[in-house]
Image (cartoon, rainbow, N blue to C red; front, side, top):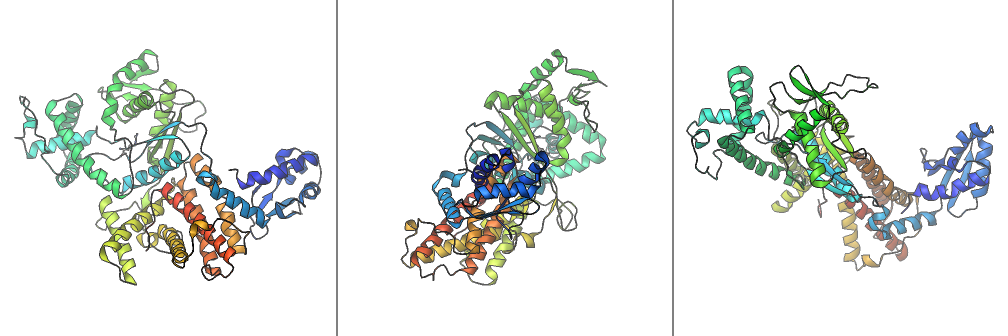
Length: 589
Ligand code: ARG
């Protein structure tokens, strides 16, 4: 379905043309003065310059041609030359009906589907998931759902960090604590045990210990580096340990992501890309892109127009080791090879922007991707505490994701139980759903690049621009519909949409009609926050309509049914939107 502004432009543009002006001046926007009109066209202002005429004269001529059109309740020219447009209530109602009757509420899927790989989450095995990985998971999941809704073939990849020094550190520390394990015996030729020689909580203790120890003890660090290199060279016992580390961690990571409604199509790891590296390096050398500089192998990626310094992309370090860049480049090769990816979107901390700039440039320059493959970096800001510094626990440590979700869900539970009694299991179930939505909405409602303050009290509030407020609106609609049904009404028979009876109803309708435009923008800009803005606006419009009208008590049966039909659409749109954001509404709350 066309956007409302397109429908209006289809009338305004020809009017410009008929009056003797370029039709392109007939562009129509949402009004920025909703108190005066709903839509506006400012084309006469720019046309005035081109045609050396007073803008209001042009606006007058155009309006003259349109003023009897039944689409408009009112169209007028306003000095110095704006055209203000108010749609006829019947036209609005017809559009809402059309929207309801079309697939996806009139949002048009692409007719040119691309394969898009979305790289998000990016947790590192052996280290517990922490709030730093929260944003990647939440934002990436939503971007994935939006792209899929837009009709593309989308593959979400968790891209686990499993190939770095953290593994060498754990192996080293484990070797000190349990030197007798067969994994450390180089002459061992038997089969390694199926069960890991550690639990997740042990791993969680070992890693931070080894990491901080390595910072004080250069010898320890050197041992860990050697262990990492030996692992990467394929030492049997270390490979077996590494597999245990992955299995134990992944089980824990999955549990957390499940709770957050985050699902990946692929559980690929940095190590999976390693096999593409030797050929890649060889080709880069052969094609003359890679050259030696201070012992390292690098590819220049700076461009004459650069305003800031872009250092060369390091392909091999001076000791011959690969690094983060090498792995990301090889992963691009893999994604093209295995999935024929035409777009790759990386949802990663914005502090990694330079890394991706280098990798993208290098991939293009060395021909790893063709010209029409899109490489997109969606960088996100930091989640801060109320003190404006990166979020930490009360004792100053990094908070575990699990603890964080528990805290939010408990806070919601207390709130629900404050004013009433609810059966324990149901209350816990609802608290979890509402808590997760509070957390996700609190994050997604901010533009991704911006830092934001993590504030449980604000996030879980049932009022204001919060997840629970949106859910509350949906639940409220559900309960109105349930009452209507319980009094003998048949919701399925409520089909007709009457022209709006009052301003608040009209506002609900006009807000609904923005849907396809909003989703398109959210997709084009990889911007879930636009959907948040929209559902907040729609919830507010609905709530003021709800407070201003007695829906169930309405005596005019046609009017009542039309309202019920409208609520069904609002509910459907809100539910679709929160699904795109990655959460759901409970039956009651
Ligand atoms: N594991 C990385 C980190 O914790 C994030 C990975 C992001 N994705 C990528 N393809 N580099 O910083």
